[in-house]
Structures are given as C-alpha cells and as structure tokens.
Image (cartoon, rainbow, N blue to C red; front, top):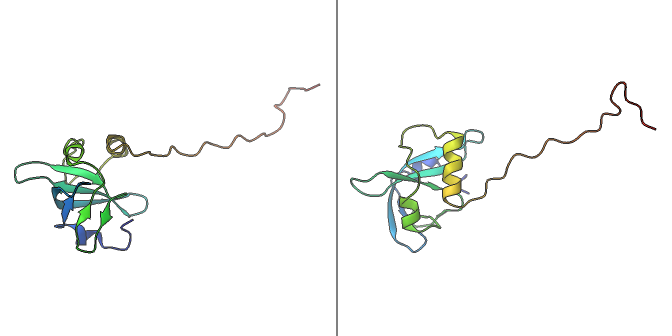
Length: 124
C-alpha cells in the first residue's frame, strides 16, 4: 500500500480513525522483516498516553498528508501494547492482526507427493 513513500516521511503525520476523529501522531513505522515494506504505524494517542499500533494496510495516506485508519478510535486505543522502539515478534504481529480482525493467511500446505510404493509393500 505505502510502498512508494519513504517510511521516515510518515513520522509526525496526523492519523484519523474511520469517522475522521483524530487518533494522534505517527511516532514510528515498523517494516516487514521479509519485504522491508512499511507494515505497522505506532501512533501516539495523547500527551501522557501510550502508542497504539495500527496496520498500514488497509489504511490510506491522503494527499493532505494525513493517515486514515479504517477502524474506530476505541478499537485502536485498545490494541495490545508492546511498547515502541523494539522489534515486533511474529507472535505480537499475529495478536495485532487478530485484534483488528484481519485475516492472516496460513502458510500453504506442503504438497502431498506420491513417491510410489513403500519398500517391502506389495499391492494386489
């Protein structure tokens, strides 16, 4: 989604929920370990509150430079808190995906190959 923008340029931008209510300001961007694509934004939700993680997909960066997240502010503020400045583990990412009701496709099944008869077995 945001592959054409430098993730550092997202820091400091304002973020809004699905209803246009301000959530806060983007504090940090987390990249996918495998692809390097921006995947999560940590949004500072207030002066003395914590950062809330939001998925950048399916969020939308508008021309005015604001990020619009398609979730309610209450859901965003209730997201699991893993602290900022640290790497998100795959388990933490999975918790966040589940929190937002986003499907995470399981890895494809291993193909079932028929390698022929087992040694010593005979078919009639």
